[in-house]
Amino acid sequence: MTGPESHLTGFQANPNEFGKCSNCGKLLTSKQEEKVKLCKECQKRLAPGEDHGTGGE
Image (cartoon, rainbow, N blue to C red):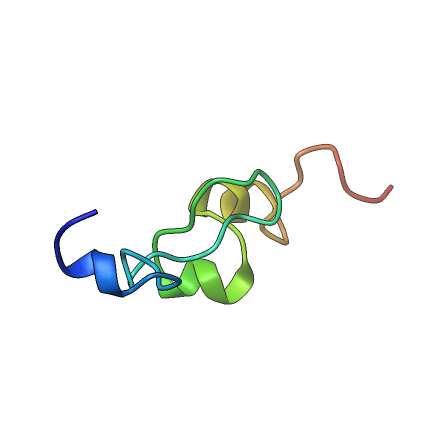
């Protein structure tokens, strides 16, 4: 391997890369998503106060 990455083994190539969504596994793209560990789509689906037929009775 050549280039600046060659001497940085063990480090992420992109320091702005976040983890994965704990619900669907999609890569997170913002600090807000990383904070709650959910991608925007899952945050919308799982948002409190929105009844999608999966809540309580």
